[in-house]
Length: 461
Image (tube, rainbow, N blue to C red):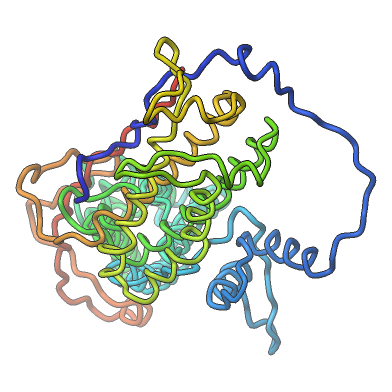
């Protein structure tokens, strides 16, 4: 949208100087400092940030409430409310985005399907006379675990696509599964069927057929949920963009929120590395770096601009203007910052470092070209590239692309519709009361997801 396409492998290009040439002059200094009491306010901010897995921002009440809600799970127990803390690293940062759109619809389907499926799962009884009760309960527990984990993952603001794929693979297997064909089910459901003997050859009475029908219904509900997952899969993961389409806005904004937080932290890392080579804050305000669009700016001003954009301005643009804010102002600023960072000078291995017009290498201190500083800048450039990559599809036209209509499918269970009729799908109440079942409908065919993103490469690898 804003020039030549950029990939995640586009680091800033030049080869780093040998570490012993520059870094040997700036060894990392470590020492033991006496403990001292921190200011109560700073100590409280740090403690809250550690507990919630959220970067403290002054006045960001919405982000604080979102982090607080994501870090504690509330449950009603015997008339009182108990809070369970989710340790840092597992809490979902949802400062801006939320579960919306197609993901919210899929999460609602998962809640309903899992609730009814668990009721049917508990009602299954063995048709084999030699069934082992302990083995049967073990397979039942595995199926229950898979279903509950699928529900929890689909309700998460930022879904781990690979984990959902793996859970369905464990539950359904990786074979030629026919919709509703309980005799051909694989995975944990197939193991439970075999242990309980829930196959047509074991059915002798109407009551036994009702038990087998419960298992077929359970399988159909899981298959239907899996097909819904395949339909929405390529739009749910903001890090694996659909070809020419738009991802769901809520998960994409959650991803941008996380990337902006990482970008702000990386700015602090760059400043720390500069200080380790004796480039102090005062120096940053006078050191000039080039702007690809013309002119110069101070290195300190650039780092402050990136930090302010990552901590406040970027989120404000998304929150106030939505998709339009992402597609216009947010993306333009992020692209401009990324290009400036990508254009920061590197030590020229064989070129001239003389003080000539337009050559900023001679005006920067040698420590700027040390490996530790250059690698920190490369990491900052990578974060900004990722911000631009995630933001670009949000503001463009979401019409389907005709260039690649059939992208390859991921290694997930393949579902093939049966050649015959679809088995009836009764409700839970009908199965419990012993009434007959009505006719069901087969779920729609699933779409194939897009190609996975390429692996990031760094200089020297």
